[in-house]
Amino acid sequence: MPATPPPASETRHAKNRLHTPPPQEQIYACHLPGRYIGYTIEAYFCDRFPYFGREEWERRIVKGRITVNGLPVVLGTRLKEHDYIITNMGVRTEPPADRKLEVVYEDEHIRALNKGAPLPVHPSGRYFQNSMTELLRERYPGEVPRPVQRLDATTTGLVVFAKTREAAYNLSQEFTRNRVHKEYLALVAGKPKSPRFVVDLPVGKVVGSARGVGPGILDPKPAVTVFECLAVKEGASLIRAVPHTGRTNQIRVHLASVGLPILNDEVYGKRIEGSYEFGLHAYRLAFNGPDRAMELTAPWPDHFQPFIEHSVLTKKTCK
Image (cartoon, rainbow, N blue to C red; front, side, top):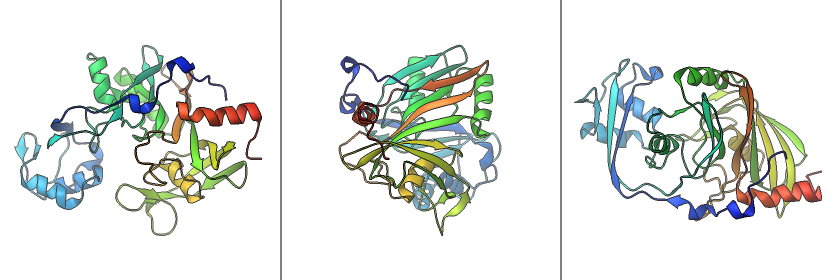
């Protein structure tokens, strides 16, 4: 592995970094994304924010907690281009989050950070202040946070933010057109049957926002991931994952489909209550930046280190 872990003096347990903001009124405001033009107000919220069911979103609309262009709306209202939607979520206490903002690379076009976990990129679900975009607004008040890709709240590793609209557009094109090489490190339960394997299974929706493979999935999309086992230790394995497509939750779904669920994955594996040692890390990105080709890596979390040492020092791989 080419990266160098941080010195022992710089490491800290994740639980010591967790922060819970005090209860506060949470208000979300945004312009309607283009793909939702023509949706009813309730269909928009159900599709974009599935952490609440349709009945709950309809209740909030009826109670006037959602406005469009400054005015309350009724069920069945069709949304139009440029509609400005404000959602009053009430007073809430956010879950604890790892709010570290570790910059691994920066120039005049981009800033790349090594994200901790749990921490979403955007405000979502119960998270608001505890999100990367809100934290970056606080640290860099003169900038608009422009993430060009997303990671799940419980995935650590590289997230790239553009500093300008031009850089954001160019980099978003690289990601959406699948021209970015991505490598992840995953800690999984079990041992693969071979040191290298490929999962070529379409990924589609199952229940709520979860994804899956096999018969019965909705809106399946082609998905291919190449895996390599790097080490096995005490019934768990360190896996390198290279996705050749960019489907939602692709790596997590593909590993679970072959009996290798990612450690501490509450959706596709088994959540360990009280543990913040999550098993998926976005390790490496290679892409064409605004002015040159780039390759970035993010140091892995501390709990990956025993597997890294096992692989590099003893050569006890999956063979």
